[in-house]
Length: 373
Image 1 (spheres, rainbow, N blue to C red):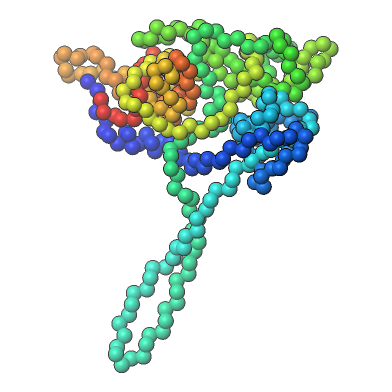
Image 2 (image 1 turned 90 degrees about the vertical axis):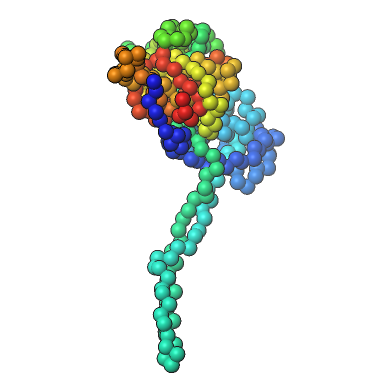
């Protein structure tokens, strides 16, 4: 027996996603001769000559408002073969976001005056002064619903992997004997690959193996971003790096990778109703999952799951009473909404923008926003 939930859930869930205007801009190809600085650049773009220490990550933070939008710069500069390493002297074209269009509407601050009766023999009434007009700023109506999530949260979504992931090395230590390392600290690296000074590297935390409880028989590993390093010079034969960003203290057990995630707006596309999935785990080792957490599902692209799909998490919420044939059986209800932000062949990563109750890994989820059971 299920708790009845009205069709208003389908409308309510859309209210939980911020509606953002989606203004697609025509892609500009990498300018021919960009490295030599001879290309003609459209007037809305700007040109930056790279100096030592520059990265697309930093340029995105300065000109696009978030370092995690670095791919937007790379799309216009595909002559750059390694987006995490740009060398001094080359010229990068950057297209800052266009200003938001604002419509101006006249709004009267006073109600229109009622016409007064005028006797036939009386002189005409004096003209009523026109009510003052005030310009009201209104934004254009958005066309599509998008997930309300900060770029810094999005890039930490992580993924569920069947096989233990491997990186290109680890942090060997720091200038001081410490267990964890935070932003701006200098660390020393042990890498199995030669990396040039100035390149950015991602630092990832791995949990596992995780044996999933419930109906799923999957076992695997959770991998998610915890920081960004920028490689420095060798110090007494040891490769150094500076911690440019740390979401958590970085440790020697964390993996170093050349992969660095980027932010991409997630358009809400609920998907076909009814596909069932199991919640394999949360990003971090939480026994209870709720709003703001990331979860991993045992259905991916092979099952037709796509970025933007919505899943309703279904969990036990109580025990039936008063019905002899169902005494002590649990009642299952929708307790959270999850939006898919990353998909692999077997698995999907989803963000929980809203929940009514916390839940544990192992429960079921159903795709779609309809509350009809």
